[in-house]
Length: 48
Image (tube, rainbow, N blue to C red):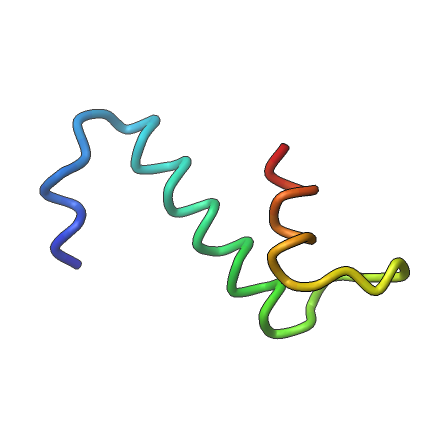
């Protein structure tokens, strides 16, 4: 994973990896989506 070299802090790395994991969970349909939001809409609602 080449991006690891660009992280300046542990907090930045943790936040990035959490966002990637969240996106994978949304794309795989592992989260409830009763409102029928698109994948991007779900991501922005949860990341807000």
